[in-house]
Length: 508
Image 1: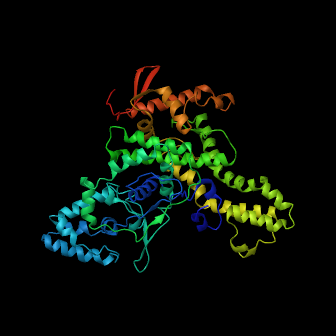
Image 2: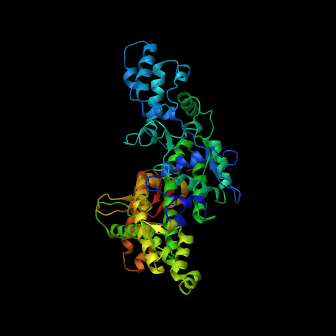
């Protein structure tokens, strides 16, 4: 077990999913954190020899984010009918009122980088417009510009009352570090690493050079740090995720546009990783299934089943927590402990070794040394479930909605109803040139467990949960939806092909 597990009061979630997935770190923030890790490992991207630890030294880029997100004065000064020099002076005085003392007071580079103040103001306007969550109420140090290149990457920061900066684990909570480990452990990880370095880390691209002009000298974290903990050396989901990235990068699409599809498909795959780990932990060998409704005007049986599918998957992680802890009862060591001369002490020793709990024999001022084994399991389960519900237990709800999979539209209950963004990402990822519609349904079911039609949902029909016609109608609604998005070509009433508009060959 790594030292990262020792950062928490006990380890249950961490053994199942790693340290850590976090509900407030949405997929786009996960990819941004991943890129900050990759940036420190460009010499050997996504190549981690066995036994070696991944370390990275993220950038802070305080000037850049302060100028973009803590600078409401640039437009006001730009509109004034005064000389260029007067604009620079007026803006500088206003900006420094709220600026930190962590490097964003050094502004001399701006006059040499821009011909005039209006050019500088237009640059700020352009870069600011590309930011993620621009209209959110997040603090300025937790807003992120689009990753145009190496100079546009930085970690989440918070500032104290004395303007001292520290990395914040709220929005960069280590999910991106886990993503780096996942992709580095994929079969084709090194090939992906080479492509990402070539496509995303060219400092000479025009937009990265614009970011560099605003930022000036690079600002880095004072020291390197290690990444989180991932409990699996290999996993089929890691390979699927990596191959999906490679597929998107192979399309005839600018890399900046490809990133949007990458973020969506990453969120979907990591959500499936979360569900699959839960299923494995509760010894459910059936694959994860996500029964999707294509929203229609009338309420259908598919909608009700999709709600049930959603709730079943929502409950998986909490069931996994309980199962993982209670599994200790089945181990040979536990049986030996119960039959020992000191059963309470031996059971406590096993609990401490397996779950790193309790610390120093105390738990919330309660002495656990006299608890029997059963009471220890019950108490730890209660604590683990309570902690799990605070953040990791919200992953399914939060991430499903973030990737466009979960929806409440026309319903009080959450269910799976993919939006256009997710459907486009699926087509770009799965379809190389063209694919018969039925084959497409089968492929997204094989890869992601998505069920739309009667062939993939056959067991629902056999169990009399829905009739075949309802699922056939659902698939027909999907075909119509994709046709409206320009992603389906109909050759006849019974023959339709899903087409990738970004096929590398450009064939139709």
